[in-house]
Image (cartoon, rainbow, N blue to C red):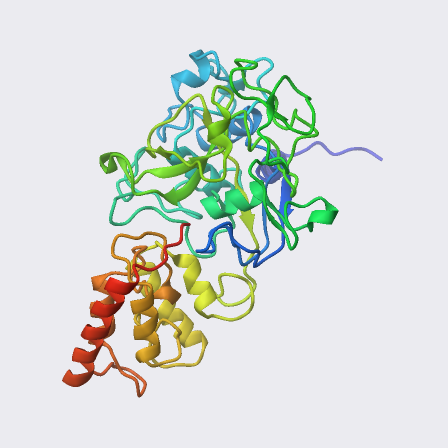
Length: 460
């Protein structure tokens, strides 16, 4: 049978189809991070305030994000290498500890290259906003996905203008790929649910001092090392491949939380120069540091716009929420456990959740911010909760202990909110103003509570 030549129209359609196939193949090519599961939800915390206790199961990177991972991200997020988001810096290429070359002579979409031998080293010289953009890219499906919204909302250019002392950038509700807060990072590193007889630190589970199932400082030695070793104290004066210390890992299977690079967390520390944005905690040891950086209670501050040769990151992946939008922990209900996950996110996020949860739970009006137990009244139970946790200089407080505006502390602002909406009978569309006698008693009780009990404070 004679073959008919392709007409120009058929050729055009053929080229369109091939282009679509190629584009589809490129768009669906996925970067895969090696993740491990951190289970044991509701584990005991490492202190009396419950810090380190996590209500839900999540995943965390088994290793730090690598140079090869970052280069793949760069070539999608900045294909022409104009660096409009500041995702690459000269130190990545020129510093002895860097690993990424920018080659403007290469084709668009491949202008960032892994330096020889560096691909499996952890990426460094990344600031917090770079890491947030990587998390957004992962959250939004990779490829040509948005880097400015998703897990975190960044506005205003390379250095976001919306990251301020009053309203720091926090993870958005419903985000899946995020930077770990310190509690999430620490649990993956130090917690072990086993009894003592089974190899755990204490009966009933407990906390190790170091991130490799040990309470003895690791040996600084070259990889692979033993089951208690790490890259620190300039033993190599260089980065090592991620996971190279194959026998030295946490109970959940994470590597290098003791050494190689320190890592970003998204916990707002309240320290440092807030002119450059709210500082965050970083965690873990690094190749040039001493063992003191590795301990559970070591979390130095870092300015969000600064980067360093000793600082990298890993991400966590939260369970996708299958229930309503207000169900943030995946238990198919909208209650205080969910709103507590918004701790430190500010009044806007708190109020949005209160309105959405009330609708989901069948109420015509939003929950009130002073209703700490969400029982549709503002009564002595709510007052006693606030009074018992009153701590104006504290940080890390959550909604259920009286922080009504998401600023991380239980203070006079929260008290004024409660006093202005006190309604022990119950509220519908509007809140009642308390009677004078009740108001006076509340003030006296609060003053007594402040003197007697400064209250606990939790960290993120």
